[in-house]
Image 1 (cartoon, rainbow, N blue to C red):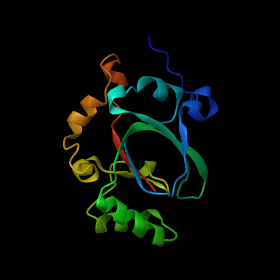
Image 2: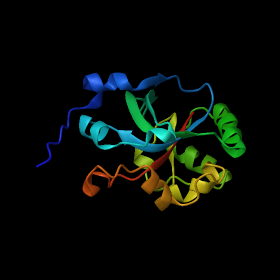
Image 3: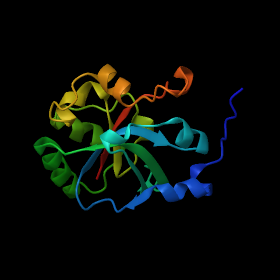
Image 4: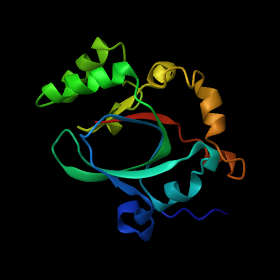
Length: 168
């Protein structure tokens, strides 16, 4: 039987594995997982040859509550469109979820799959935009998921979907 440790990552020693990222300096795109608990931290393993990153971002939800947001994934270079979107976002104050949807639409993007995970400085872009967000480095979500799945981990522990995080 597998023991599931639901301890919040923020309350554990494992949180020290995550580098603090100061949001707002430049856009950052990560393909990976939101990590909330020690169980999440332990069950996800990305091959070292992909150079995975563990970062934590101080974020605000849309009710202005501060929280640490932990992400484990691989970083890809922001595309020109992402950089333009970032520079346009800086001018939008305050950015609420409705204006964010409208802003994404201007760039042909959506966030319908995981919008509840979005924060004021962390946005989850729908996986159907994978090729657009990675400059065609990754074009197939299924292939990306296979690449980011550890075969030593039980299949039912790998059911978490890979997300596209845009950190601004």
